[in-house]
Length: 199
Image (cartoon, helix red, strand yellow):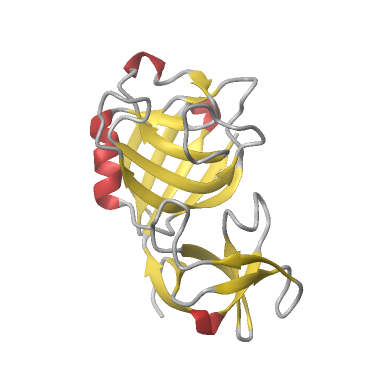
C-alpha cells in the first residue's frame, strides 16, 4: 500500500521469465554485478508474478519474476531527463526538488531513451577520476561498450571533474553532472527509483 513507485528487492535467487510463468531466460541473483542489493522497479503485476524493469530484461522490455522471491516497498522519488534541454529533474512525491544541467551522449554514442530505474548507488573514492565521486547506475544499456567503465554497456548518471563538458553532447551515453550534484543524488535517491529519459 501507499504512493510512489513499487520496488521489488530480490531476497532469493530466481529466474527471469518472458511472461508470467513463461520461458525462463536468465538467472536473477540477489545482488547486482556491482554488489548492490537487486532492486527492480515493478511496472506490472499478474497473480503471483511481478513484471519488472531490469538490466537483465533489456531496454524497453518487461521481465517477470515470482512475487514470493522478493519483498516490496515504495519509492517516492523520480528522475526525469530531457536530452534536448540537457536537464535532469528530480521529483519527490511529484514535487520538484532539484534541476541539474547535465552532459549527454555524443551524436555517435547517444543516451538511450525510455523508462528505466536506478540499480546501483556507487562511491568511487576518486574525485579526480572520469566518474568523479558518485555514480547512479541505471537499468539502461547502450548499444556500444563504454571505454574505461567496468560496467560494460551500462548507462549511468555520474559526477565528473570535467565541468567544461556539462551541458554538452559529449559523453559515451552517460549523463554527467558536478561533484556536488552527484553527492546530493547519492544522499537522496534510493535503489529502484524510476528514471524516465526523453529526447
